[in-house]
View (cartoon, rainbow, N blue to C red):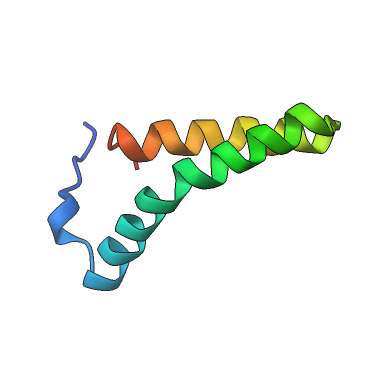
Length: 63
């Protein structure tokens, strides 16, 4: 049986770090997307994919 985690049982510093990440992930993703459009390298595409997945996970409360 899978144990469900309560987000409010996390330490305060962890909740604060997550809140800061939620605020900054979209602007960082947009800047990375613009950079990838102008200078597309394999590394840029991979980092953009990671940022998009992280943004989805944070905004959908998967993390």
